[in-house]
Length: 106
Image (cartoon, rainbow, N blue to C red):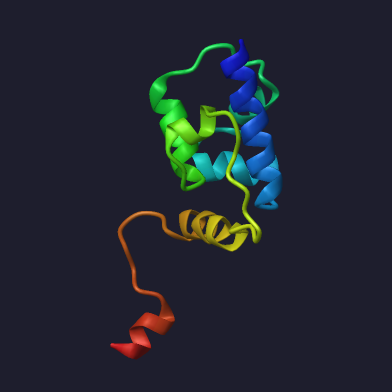
C-alpha cells in the first residue's frame, strides 16, 4: 500500500505543479478521467508496470522517479511543455497534416 500511496501523492503533486486539472492529466496520460481519479486518490490498489511507465513518461520522468523517495525540486515548473503535449494530442487526430503555418513556409 505504501507504494500505491506514494504514486498517488506524486501524481497529485505533479498535476498541481504543472497547473493541470484531473481531466487534463488523464488526457496527458492517455486514460479516462475516472481511472486517473482512482490512481491519484490511491484507491486503485493494483497497477501494471506499463501503467507506472506511462504515468512517469507523461511527466517526462523515469518510473523510479515516480516511486522514489522525493521528487526533484524544480524552480520553474515546465507546465507549458506538458500543456503543449495535451494540445498536440487534441489537435492531432488521424494521419499527420501540416498546419497552416507549416504550409506557408514550404
